[in-house]
Structure formats: structure tokens, C-alpha cells
Amino acid sequence: MAKWADYLISAVRYNSDHTHIDQVRAHEDTGDSVGEGKVYARQTIVDAIKNGTTFVTIYKNSSGNYDKGQKVYVITVKGVGYLKTVDNGKEEDNLENLPEF
Image (cartoon, rainbow, N blue to C red):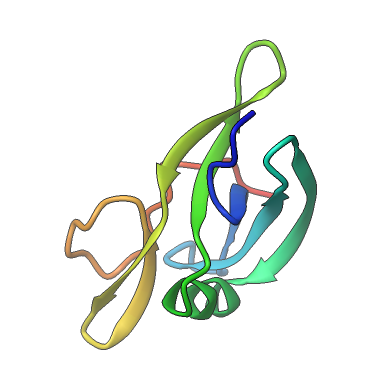
């Protein structure tokens, strides 16, 4: 496996209104394997991306291995940073319908 990013996001947890991501499960990308998943606050990921850390989404394929998804960006809408794979201009996070935990 080639290194895809600094960290790989495999799952998300939304707030009680299900409008914004509160937490993500991210794994260190060692280049050879996917590290153990750890839970991070959404703002921690936003800050990390703004400071140059790279993230991509990952998902399990039918063989049980991880496949690379899309690069994760911070897109600011009305002064708030959202985690997105596509800049759709909406005031919401968008991470390719990753599974929830």
C-alpha cells in the first residue's frame, strides 16, 4: 500500500441534531498499513488540515481491506470550517456518507 495521506478517516459521529460531525475515527497512514483507529474531535481535524496535515477517507471493500476514498478539505461557509470532500457551498460536513460509530 502506498501512503495516501497523513491520516485516514473511516467513520464519523454526528451531533444530536445530526447536522454536523462531532467526531471522526482516524487512522495513521504508515505507508505500509492502516494504523489503529482513534477518535478525534471535529475541530481537531479542522485545525490539523489548516496546519497542513493531510486526510483522505477510506472504506472497507468486499475483501475486508481498505480502499482509498477522497481527499478531505476544510471549506469555510459563513465563517465556519466544515469537513468536506466536495465544495458544495452548504453549511454542513460532507464525508462521502462514511459509516457512523
